[in-house]
Length: 278
Ligand code: NAD
Image 1 (tube, rainbow, N blue to C red):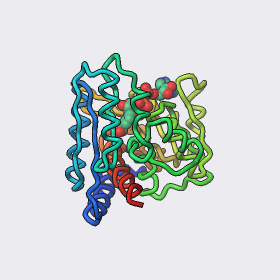
Image 2: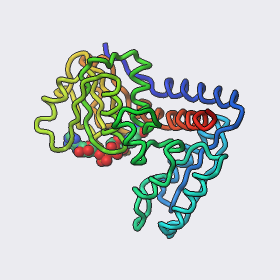
Image 3: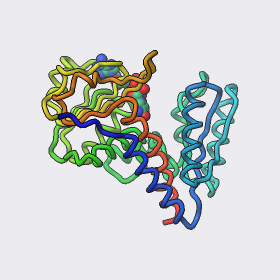
C-alpha cells in the first residue's frame, strides 16, 4: 500500500499553530513582501502570501515597486524595511525584472528578517550547521517527513536538483538531521541507479515526469517538489501513479509540497518576530 501524503492537512496544521502563536504574541508580527514589476506569476504568488499573512492575524506590510525601479531604489526600500521595528520579516519576490541584480539586493535583508532564508548569510549559517531561518520549500518537505514519522537519522536521502532555492538547502537540512545525503543533478550519470538507493527521495529538478517506477526502490518515501502547469492542471516531476505498490509514501501534485511553502513562510515570520523579542 502506498500512502499519499496530505500536504494540505499538514499545511493547515502549521498555519493554525502560527495563528495561535500570533494571537498570544505581545506584539503582532509583520511581513513585508516586496514585489518589483508586474510579472503575472509573481503577482499571484505575492497575493497568496499576503492573504496567508492576514489569515494568520499578522500585519501585511507589502511594498510594490514599478518594473523600471533602479537597483538603488530597491536597495532603499529594503534598507527602510530592515530598519523598521514593525517589520518582522522581509521577502523579496524573485525573479526580478531584467537589469536588477538579485544577489546584492537579497543581501540587504538582515539575517534575523530573512524569512525566505535565501541571503548569503542565511545560506552560510545553514552550511555551517548554525541556527537560522531556512528556505521555505525544503522546510516544508522536512515538516511533511516529520508529520509522517519518516526516520531520517541514518537513512539514505537522495535529492535531485541542486538549486540555491530548493536542492542545496534541502541536502544540507537532511544532513543536519543525520541522513546520509546524495545530491544528484543534470550531469549525474545513471540517475535511476542513484535514486534507486534512496530511502527518502526528494525530486526538485523542474522536469515534468522525470522520475518513475524504475527510479524508486520498494518502500521508499518520495517527495515531489516539481510544479508544472499543464492543460490538465498541475503536474510534478514524479510519475506518481507508477509508484503505487512500490513507494511507501508519495506526495501528490497538487496538494503535497506546494501548500507547505507558504505555511513555512508564515512559521518563519513568527519565528523571526520571536527572535527580535528575545
Ligand atoms: P532550477 O531549475 O533552479 O533547478 C533545477 C535543478 O535540477 C538543477 O540543479 C538541475 O541540475 C537539476 N536537473 C535538471 N534536469 C535534471 C535531470 N534531467 N536530471 C537530474 N537533475 C536535473 O529549479 P528549482 O527552482 O530548484 O525548482 C525545481 C522545481 O520545483 C520546479 O518545477 C519548480 O517549479 C518547483 N518548485 C516548487 C516549489 C513549491 O512550493 N512546491 C517551490 C520552488 C520550486
